[in-house]
Amino acid sequence: MTAEPISRFTFNDFMSLSVVLYNSLGIHPYDLATRTGLSTRWLLTIFLFQVVNLNFVLGLECAFVYISFKNNDNFVESCMVMGYIVFVIVGELKMVTVWLRRDQLNDLMIEMERIFPSTDAESQRQYQVERYLRRGRMFTKGFAGLYLLLIATYNLFVIIQFLVKRYVQEVPGASMAMPYTSVSPWGVHNIWGFCLMYLLQSLAGYTCTAGHASSDILIFAVLIQTIMHYDYLSRRLTELLIQAGRVKDGYQKDLKVLQQLIAYHNQLLGLTEVINRVFGLPLLLNFMSSSLMVCFVGFQMTIGLSLDVVCKLAVLLVAEMAEIYLICYFSDELVNASFSVSDAVYNMNWPDADKRFNKMLIIVAQRAQRPVCLRATVFLDVSMPTMTMVWESQGVLIASNID
Image (cartoon, rainbow, N blue to C red; front, side):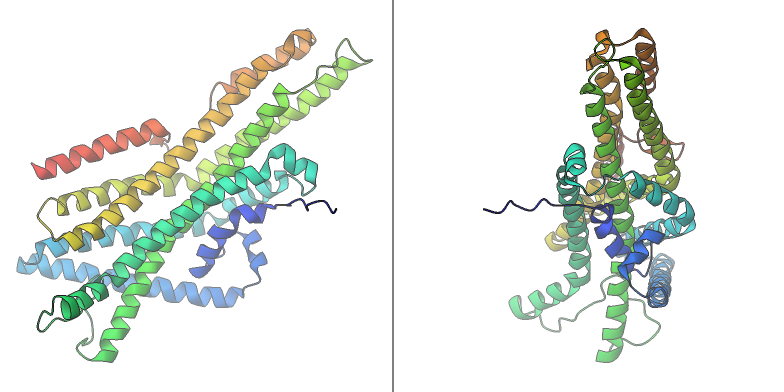
């Protein structure tokens, strides 16, 4: 009877989904991602085309809002388009931020790959790599699926609406509209002009949605690995077998192991600082855009829209809140994982250790009692209480709109 083969996982297994989404935008998020083998020139062509098209559609949306307010009509539709404008701008800014901080992101990815567990079975078992990968994939695939549902809903909404009116309700003269804005630099009354504009707007919708999701999934993938390292460090400290007084030169052996663990802890603390420098601005953009989008959506849902439009807005609202929830959830997990290092120091067999060894443990525990977390630049420390604060503030905004 042959033994069941042991799964061996690599750093790229954690990062693959975010890399695929970035590649669909024509972006190599970091140098290690070039291992996909895709042509850099081909990706650059895709990126430039999508950015130009996204800004082209953004300009049409801004023109629609300007014309609507100038003519004092289409107020409800203008509110929806303003929501699209915010979504597009934030998605583009998140892509640009990753591009501008690519050198720092490269350094972060190189360091994370360097400390990633080797592919031998014992190392993978000690770090519980499969458990964290499975958990990470559950969240990232679910989040990516939600955003794909979001863009599919908005891109296909007008088609489904047209089919229902034409063949179910049998509304005479039913016609199909554009997914995001009716403004066009060319005539859309003929089939070719209509299809071209529809495809360009749909592609722009995918570009900004993927810009949102790829950045967030990259953050989630980095955080789940960082949590894995902190948990491993806590287990190593708890399970550390004290040699002092039991074997010859036991104190020296204990000290050597502890020095390695302290260096590992320092490395993780430095790593989280780099994570905050790289992703601080995208995180701040997430919270700002979420507040604006929820305000727009909450206002629109209180002015008596049709059921199908309310369902369309509800998908956007769920996606925005899920984004903020997952960011706060993973940051809270990071807080708990980093703080658990101090608990591990207390729970280890320190009474049998040398006094000099214990003095070093006190320093480790003191540093671990200042838990690390995600920071949206200098403005906000992210955790689950932050989620509560965001929900409360957005609830007040919606309630004020209702009043």
